[in-house]
Image 1: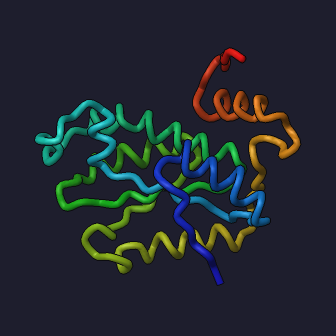
Image 2 (image 1 turned 135 degrees about the vertical axis):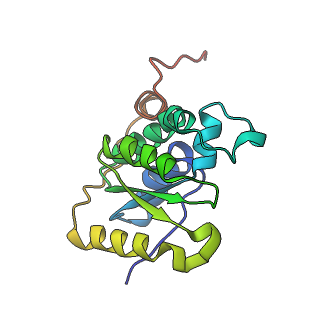
Length: 173
């Protein structure tokens, strides 16, 4: 049996809380993680306006993959095998999906082309098989990014620097 949970929006906030808090308290040991991405969202991160999302724009997808790359690095920081599921829309082109595949591959994450937007659960069968295979291989080396006994301020600094890219964290008393 496999248990699948949705950890929340974003691999920085939802996944961090899931890994560092929920998994720790519940004694969970995730075997894999899936980051769901859309060409549309990556185009928007790449500077395309809502009205122009239906037109192919590989350059914008590549620019938007900077955001996806951060999410991949964040999830991988927890030692969990990571897969990117591209929830493909009808206007998405093969070239745009290829740009996502190239960006993710460079970070050690495989991309599975999915059609759950149009086909529901049937559009994710390949994803489910791939994730189950990853879990069965037992390669996860899950570990929270901070020790439970760290001081609260040190936990904040660890999250800010390791996941958000902060150079330092400053707060007055």
